[in-house]
Length: 306
Ligand code: 3PG
Picture 1 (cartoon, protein in one colour):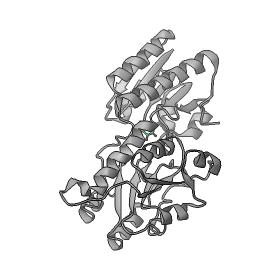
Picture 2 (picture 1 turned 60 degrees about the vertical axis):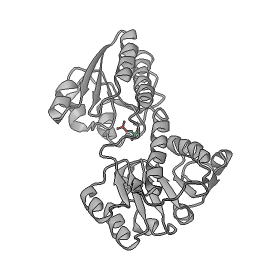
Picture 3 (picture 1 turned 180 degrees about the horizontal axis):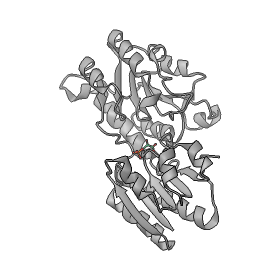
Picture 4 (picture 1 turned 135 degrees about the vertical axis):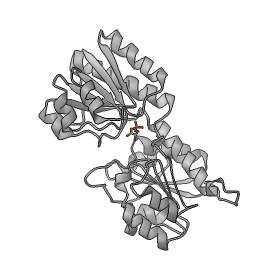
């Protein structure tokens, strides 16, 4: 059995070592493809593998077709919008993610971005504090829950909207559930975007929604750029000169945003939310363990395709 780690953005070495240990203890072989620049390198690397561990790497129909022996792909992380689930299902390939394993890292970066934003990107002028501000958590999944936990330390007032999570669960954490996404944006000074990119959520954060925010509103996005209606956000920020947008996912219109909204817009150059040794170890080793358990015992607990 051959397991390939295919990571354009490599794991920390300590995580690769941990994955190797897990894979070799099962009697499997490990191959490594990191920082590849051409898709052909990926197509070549998958030819003889049974399993692949990826991050945001694109696994489309062409990759799946090139991997004739492939049985399982594990996305070491949460979002699996980078995998063509239909093509995988058609080819009889199991797709899994490793929910929760990197969510603390992402949540910590939310606050890295927020402190930077409220202190005016460290430009020397007087900023504001997070304490007593209303924070809206847009989707109360693994990242959202960690955001809530950390926000309590900052003394923030917490609100959450999640279409799939019960009010009781949100309340248990001392967070106020709100009944609609519109209400969340109307209520909160800051909104942390933690929704996955799906057909329903793509471009769902639009001008109409963001315009509901109170004066000085801040959006912090550590989820996906696809959930933002970028063209509408630009139009809105041109009139709402009080709104700030900070993101860990480089927008499609980064150059335009940078030019138009200096001092109100910031993006990390490369998605850094899950890029910690701890998150790499947790998600990478979980992925390896899930592969071993799937191949040896047929365990499909974290399967995300049919
Ligand atoms: C995720 O979906 O798990 C995060 O967006 C992290 O993605 P990454 O592994 O590409 O950093």
